[in-house]
Length: 112
Length: 111
Image (cartoon, rainbow over all chains, first blue to last red; front, side, top):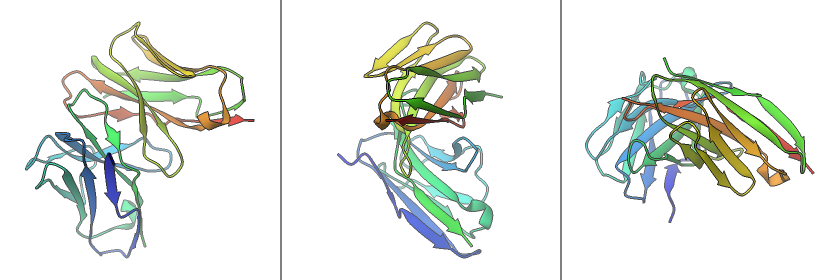
């Protein structure tokens, strides 16, 4: 039982490049979330999904897009990377909204 | 606006020296308070959920308690393997997705 798996684990991009972060969960959870974690700040929600085919904005959605074509996968896209998007990105999933969220081990992204 | 403040920011203990971490919160009706542990280079690992004042949960050397304004994570006779960052998060009633996280307490337990 892998839980929540994020790929890639590390990535370095140049300003203006695009990329997609992949999150996969094998717990049959309905809800999935993308967070970013920056030094000295708490985890901040970027986007979330309440089920297959749905997405919604969180606290800090600007510069990001998401898609949830399959229940088990949640993709986070950066269309034109900026240095301010250098961060550690975490994906999480939960069975229901008031149930604990289970996190992956993150993607460390640097934008030069 | 929901707020979570964790204190202290960092705590050093000797093995066996019990202590407590604090999570103070302001929320418009608490739906749930969550404690997580985060090891370096890893994602947060779920520890406890508390739903109402007076509730307590225990797991090995950890015990979480909840009042109407704060939660404590008590660590009894800690071991070096308890070293980690401990995160607190709250979910407000009426919010069906949003967790507000604190900045965490970095706990170091020396042998």
